Length: 107
Image (cartoon, rainbow, N blue to C red):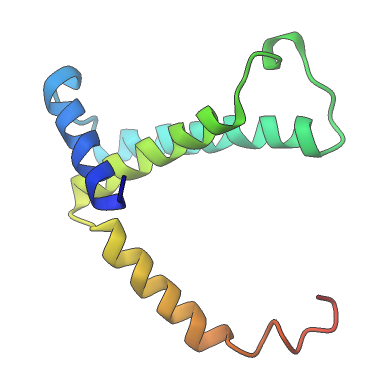
């Protein structure tokens, strides 16, 4: 599935099952919640925190997909084509950082 197809599928789902998009500000708050849930699983899986019983059934991929879902909702609502935005962002990073990391002795 491409990003364009994923954005369309999210839009179709919202229009079929979700009635309408939540407001942009509500979706921004939901995105923040979802990133927090992802961070919680990352901290417990790869960091120093131990799992609580309520965390044991969480799936890392599912948490990442939740973040992606809400990001796609926001993109759809604000008219952002994520494929184009990502392509431009990669080009920006390539121009800006093409030598930076190679010359970093820490890497």
